[in-house]
Structures are given as structure tokens and as C-alpha cells.
Image (cartoon, rainbow, N blue to C red; front, side, top):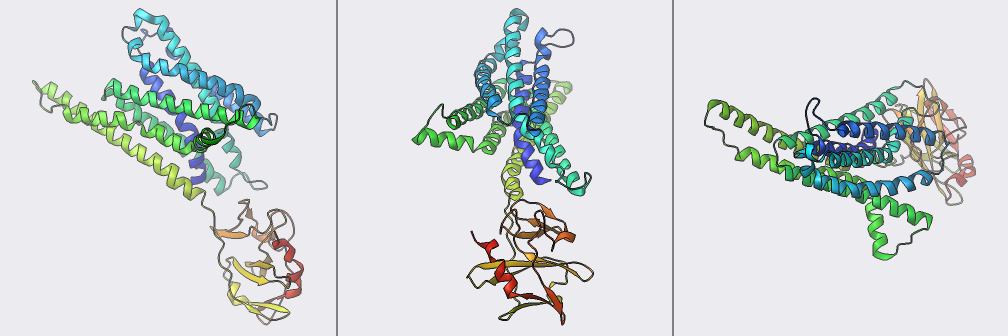
Length: 424
């Protein structure tokens, strides 16, 4: 669930913040008194989402196997649209004041915002949508607890994005227009940097642009810092948050009348509440994309090998040592000097799963136990406990053994014969 959450959150948060700030800066009029372009941004959001779904489906079915044929023109369009958005943000205050006097300019701003939203959403969402294909593991039942947890992580990420954007949006009612516009401008500039860096990286990969030295290092740093860029996009809203807090504290509690006093107190409550909740949202997102990501991608460590009785011809492991139903790992040095590992786990009744700590597909990466399941460290596939000891798939390579006198007996000659599986 956590892995799904931290994978979806950064891919959707940037476009959501862009949609939100443009909605705040360009929304004017009430009821029927609205410009013709008032609904264009919503159309852009829908068009970008639909196009992203189609593109993701084509990628998932391998109809499109070269993403550069789509990414290249899309990134060029994104960079141009982002540059136009800078003008939109800077001119938004003037365009929305007395907007009836310059409808054409406001419609142009909305048109540019619509195009930028559609392109940004189309650029960001396919990878998020493809996360849906990871809900069900290959050769596994559709409805499992793991599938439900992955789906829950996906849904929670989307819900978090909506809530965070709504919290930040609430600040525009109590902070100064300049403070919110500055945050919006920074969101657009950071989006431009992301798109521009992606374009440069694509040109570098195709050989159409060759960067060396410092320019290349800067491009590589920015390209690999996507999570950090999203965190910065979130944290720029500390500007309106501080502005809200200052406005709240500056608002006098007492007014000339009881009605004015109530209005002042309500304003202060809203200002301070939106400021505090915005700071909480920033902290939460930062922790989710740093600590949460590190935890989700934490590389499992194999348990240390256990001791056992070893003679010249036989390795002996007592039943009592491995009868608890958990994974037990052992180490053996073959005649050719190769250090090998083998595992034993009691499956059910008197049956034991015994094999090398390696498989034909993933080599000697090894297996670890998590939540009662045996998982391949390299491919993260959960192994069916009943199939351990049999050939096939990602199962541990079977190891011959016999039993007797309350112990499992493994011939060292059998181990020596399989040492090649642990050679690099």
C-alpha cells in the first residue's frame, strides 16, 4: 500500500496544484455573469486525463513501444505552454479586474491555461495510470488482500492530492493576492523546469543535443530530483501560509459594532486555520515523499545463516531447528571455494521445502520472509509455499535431501554439484 501511495502522489500532485492555482487566479463572475472561457480549464483537465488513459492503455498493450515519439512533441508543447503561463499568472490580477473591459484578453489567458493543463496532465498521468496494472501479481487470483491494499494506496494518494490542493486553495480568501500569485508563479516556473529538463534529457538520449561538464551535471541532477521538485512545489505555499497567519493576527478582534467584531473574529479563525492546515499538509507531503519513499523502497536484508552440523559427506539439520514454519538460511563452502546458501522451511505436516537460496531466473539474490510469505529479493515475487522444493518459475532450485533420526540430511556432494548457481 505504501509503495503504491508514494508512487502515485508525486505524479498527480504537481498537475493538481497547477489546476488549482489557475482556477484561483482566473475565476471571475458569478451565475450567468461569467466569461465564455470560464469552463475551458475543466475541459482541458478532462481532455488531458482522457488522452493520458488512452496513451497508458497503448503502452500497456505494447501498441506504442517507443515513448519518445510521443514524449518529444509533448515536451516541446509543454515548455511553450509553461512559458505562456508565466504571462498568464503575472497578468491575472489585471485581467480579472473589470474583466468586462477586456474579455478577449481573459479568454486568451483561459485558453493558454487550458492548453497548459491538458498538456501537463497528459504528460504526468500515464505513469500513474499504469500503476493500476501492478494491483494483481501474475498468476495470482484477482481479489487478494495484497490487491486490495495496493488499490487502497492508490485511492488514498488521489484523495490526499485533492485534500492538499483544497487546503492550499482555501488560503486565497484570507492572504494577500500578491502572496498567492507569487506561490502560483513559482509552481509554474518549477513545472517549466521539470518539463524543460525532461526535454533536454530526451534530446541528450537521442544524440540531438550533447551536454558536457557542469550543464550535464545540472541537467542530470534536476532530472533525477523529481520527488524533490514536487516537495518544493508544495513548500512554495509557505508564502501564502505566512501571509494568512500575519493577516489573521493583524485583524483586530474588536470592531465598531458587534457585527463587525464577529466578522473580524471569523476572518481571524479562517486565516489561522488555513495557514496551520497548509503547514500540516506541507509537512505530511514532505514526510510521505522522503521517509515514506525510503521505507517503501527499503532493500530487504537477508537473515544471517544459522549453524548446523557438518561432516565431510553430510550436512545435518535437526527438525527441531526448522519446525517453526519460518524461513531458515544456511551457508556452505563448496569444494571449489564457492560460498553457497540453502534454505529450509516447514510447509505443512511433515513436509519441508528445501532448496538453494537462489533460482534459475534471478540468480543468487536470495529469499526473505515477510508477513508469512517467502519473497524473492530481486523480483519481489511471493513464492507459493507449496511449490518450494519443485522446479519452475522463481522457485528455489531444489536440493536433494533425506531424513532420519529426527534430522534433515543433505549430502555435501549434492551441494558441491550446484555451486555454479552462486558464481558471478
